[in-house]
Image (cartoon, rainbow, N blue to C red):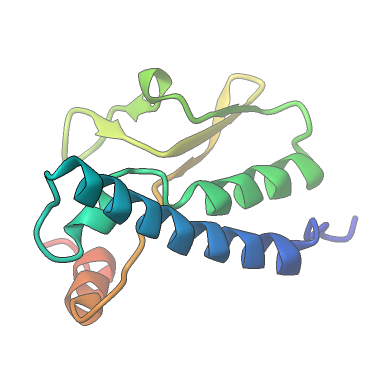
Length: 126
């Protein structure tokens, strides 16, 4: 069975546009409220910048062999026990026939701290 990429070119473009629009909207909303965070933090504290990317991942899961999988994105059901911490809150869980298929955490990296953030996210523990 060939991999179904679900029109990822257009959906990725839409997700990127939504990412930047969400950042701009969050920044504007905070500025209007008079309670803006310092620096670029105002653009990311809204918490919805990666929704376009998560929608693409859900489409890929459903189109490629897991059409009946349960995809959880509501905060109340996103916690799993972890090795380094007793609980870990994920952004998306995919469960099929009672089995955990994927646990995904979305992170965005923008600005001058990209190098440090990348190293912190990909370096080996310890």
